[in-house]
Amino acid sequence: MSTNDKQLAPARRRFMTQAGALTFSGVAVAMLGGRSTALAAGTTDEAIEQDVRILNTAIAAEHEAVAAYQLGAESGLLEPGVLKVAVTFQGHHKEHIDALAKAVRSLGGTDVHARNEYNFPVDKLKGQSDVLQFAAGLERGAVSAYAGAIPLFGNRDLSAAAASILADEAMHWAVLRNALGLDPVPGAFFS
Amino acid sequence: MLMTRHPAAAAILVAIVPLVLSLSVAATPPVDLAAGEASYAKCMGCHSPEYNRTGPLHCGLLGRESGAVQFFDYSEAMRGAGLIWNAETLDRFLAAPLEMVPGTSMGFAGIADDEERRNLIAWLATLNSSSDECREVLSPRTGSP
Image (cartoon, rainbow over all chains, first blue to last red; front, side, top):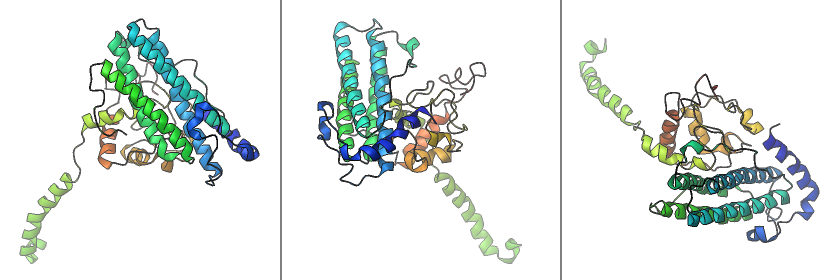
């Protein structure tokens, strides 16, 4: 059984025993409204497991983003003003992790943790623009990842939460593009 | 022989066959690698050509068995999928990953546009041992993923 599946395995069992007490709570998941529509909508166990799996994939990507911004922050390549923005964006990603992890736990799953190490193209980061381009690529990919996940959630509240995070990632991407001297919003539609 | 028994029909065939052949060639539009590379930006939230990230690396993807990249923690579903990634399987997977491999960790609805998938797959096919990005990753010295 892979780590991914181990994290899922208890989800179904716990959901069965805790279903009556299943709630989304806390300010961090405020968009979830303090309740789950999973039961009301008759969401199946399989759909809940899929939701947990998708949430954990998102959490894994968010952990990577936190690590990437840490790399940028410690690179010594960022001007003070840019560094401040990078650290702010990193804080957003940490908040995303907190919110997504709470959602996973509310569904009876186990949230994935950060890896001990990540593979980043360190040898290609020689100046501030390299770091910004690297970060912009991750944010662009995150927009697509959330856009691709939103239609799949069995629980529509999770779709709303993911859309909220997508909006934040899109703003990061636009700010980074602007800092690179690129058109911050290069089109009307993104997927 | 057709030519001798039905000369008129043979003449029509002689005229039509090249036309049909040219139409069949035209029915497979050329791929746009630049468009495929642009589409790959969508994958970069989780994937990279050279590195395992949230998703497995893509160097050497075409021709590889599913769930076979070293040091990547696949879902059980993907490990047991028993696929060989080629243009046909990738096209089906990218159109609807969770329909093709239920239980995959790739929580992505899919790429609906046929042409976009075709271009993306063509670009992914360039991530082979002769590409700058993948040469070292795929070299026997470093161990093929």
